[in-house]
Length: 216
Image (cartoon, rainbow, N blue to C red):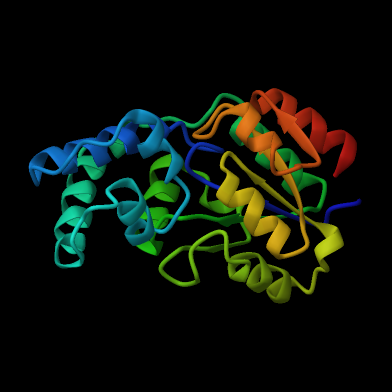
């Protein structure tokens, strides 16, 4: 076993939620009569902690309106999050990793409340041994989430792999001296992910599972 600890991002990596996040950001801007960011700009912030994401998506947003933006985003996202689905093949991949003795965890830009809600909706809670969220740690790309997960299980960086769909995930892995696998079916485009030198770049969950079977 090369990678004892396998760390997954959530949105855009396990859950097909990138489009819903973009729509919620844009709808929140419309509610507050703010400039509506184009899809690419809104997609780029996926994976960051919510406050950081709102600041980057709407750079002219006055600080005294951050909370209103966050509240409207949550309203729009939570109104439809129960309808979001996992990418095909995710449960079987996670079950196999558990069966082969890997430690399977999550490092996400979601809040703890948001992740707990998502785990309940998806039914995946039993397949993860631990998780870290953006309201408990520094937001990605700071390495704190990975550092805490490695410390919790006593796993070295060279025995850890981070899997995510954004440059924020890959930069977090680099900052923690951890290998990263990029998935191109989520928020950030293939070429942008390749710029950050992942050890692999895969186009769907089937390819990811095959890579893990061979390399993890």
